[in-house]
Image 1 (cartoon, rainbow, N blue to C red):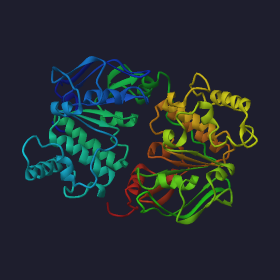
Image 2: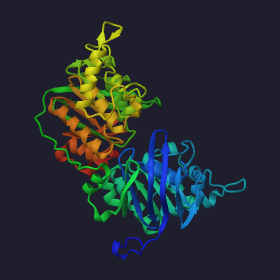
Image 3: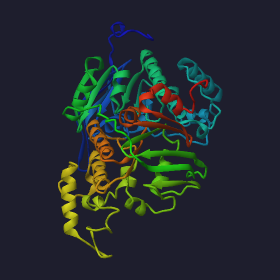
Length: 517
């Protein structure tokens, strides 16, 4: 069946049906009478905003959660999936965004771990032959004797997928499978899962990237606030229509990046070297500058030093070598607080763990880091509650933060509103240099549009911006120049008008122009 055009495909029968699934968590109705089906030999996308119910639905199908009501049918018969073990036994498996592998073990050992049904000894010969057969069939080369911790994240993902195929599945759920891949690796993954589909496998593909939905899926089920909005044939809808279904309004995809003559250099990193949490050199001689009214995008696959660079720039980690300058002043050994006073604003990649105190009220998070400054402080020990309330009210209005009051506990806010809270706080001061770490990760299309507009607003006001993102569309859309990082080194810095996806993808894999792939 490989390569059959759509009109030549046979009529497919559902392998999975869910009827009126409902799942409640404390104070949240995560799934509200959701019904859908997945057919044999199709790639079915689950699409929705952050918190729409995609993960809850997939984890309910997989047995991680038990539904409060509703039914699941598999291969035409009702099933009770009480645990992931039940799902695997039925022929359902999931590849999570965060891999579940044992790093010290080999590829072969990871794949067969937990698959032995009886007896004391594992049939390693059969396992090796079966995995080699899978490798040949899908054209994916894996060293079965390599330790998992030696593998790239892309290779680790193949291990997870082959583990599911090895045990034998009829339905494979892929949760954000391209999050750690270069564009070339994503294209290879799409090719392989299409081959799996053509061989009869049913695939649920969870992604927030509308371009991927259009590129890979046959049908799409759109969820919004726990409800199913629609199931549609992918070829019959546009990205715009899908986005509108997701958020219930028109969404602008391409933010107009205004070309502006850059001003003076506002930030400099010179020959930065730093150790990562393994004690290894995670930054290796990184040098770049950012000018006023400029966005420098930093592209790279996750885990190549971006987080360490962010922490060094904001003052959470110390470089072992090199220097940092902000507005002409050396800040290499200054505190985070002093960097903020000089005009540094930051959006950390983990808004929950690093950007906010989730048990604090909204108003407390809005002044976090500024609580000892006027007008919020009265002397060294007292706070000005009137000034805090006034500032909070204005910030909530200006940044459209959906909260019943400034006294609301922050953990009750959605991801998009948490990010708006951070923006409101960081942009309350005059920003000379903004470092944004994965600023739209995990956000729905509406919140993503909002955050991108606010970042470009800072550029127009004169700030220099370092945008760290694994979303190449975001990098290309917002940046004036693009730097690519690989294993802690800057591979190149390119003008956005001279950049293309293929070139950036090769640099992200550590391959310079002209080198053999």
